[in-house]
Image (spheres, rainbow, N blue to C red):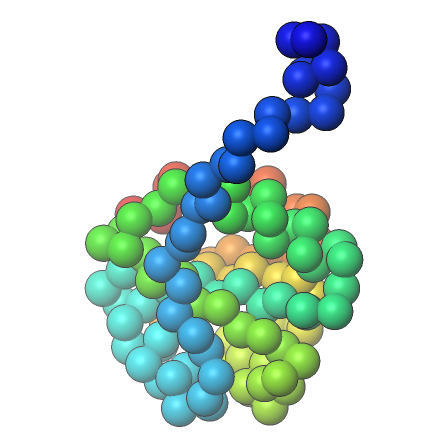
Length: 128
């Protein structure tokens, strides 16, 4: 029976990890992100809710994310519903749009960014 459990998984529900997401849904928040980046890193996760790759990368990101709210602010941008905000993120931080995408902002500038599977290769433990 243990063999089947290993193949098909346990029927016991897993506790879902919840991250301290801050919804990014207004262009005006970008000034706040820039200002706050002088005190602690600001992360923006741009997610396409209709993309399977984006969903898979986000699931892995959530699973691996270890920073606390005191170490960084974590913003979530639904780029399909907030396209204007997504466009302005690119203009403000001078990073070409990709999806999914993670931007790390410190002292008003992007110090790291990645898209797709490379998001989960970023070493966020060195931020604080």
